[in-house]
Image (cartoon, rainbow, N blue to C red; front, side):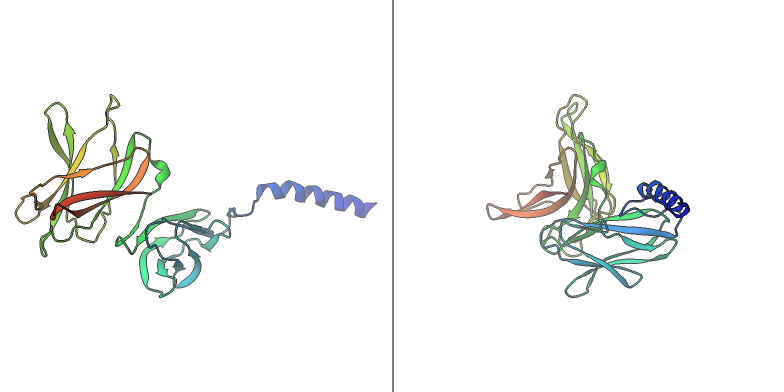
Length: 252
């Protein structure tokens, strides 16, 4: 009888404790943390291996997320390099130095497209409201930005009161083949619910003049989408056998 009574007490204890801890949860009070990596499904995104301080933790596929189940547990308080390498060649595509927080998950959202030439860390798309768009810009201009010419990316918004475009933001040193580190959250509609119109121009950092295409035009039309996180690619296309400034957007 005494043994049965003790077993009953132990059973009640385990039933009470088990609901407080689920598979995939970090155990609070322990000196650990975790990593989670989402790889965006962009054109020609490779399978990537994830390393922390030189130790292979997991692999992530295009459009997939690593570190959910099983979790990528790491020691809290550690400071080191998180590196993302091509699975086949081990080439380092992205890396960054981090400090692991205790009892928390350090999440990464990465964009890596060999076709587009994009490599970078992205923000969280779920934070974008329906009347706004979160955007980063990528410079894919070729011949219309001559070799050796450094440019700023200047953004303009249409002013209905004046009928003109007002410059409101500048990304300095908008280098070819690179993405802006800063991201903007832009309204896509005004207070009356009307769509806002945006254009961009490339300003020569040496002369202060705006670059022209072969038409010649300085303006680059931009299209943004409410509630979306986008990469806006500034590039060029051939129209009537002439090179024209152009932009395209990738929704993430």
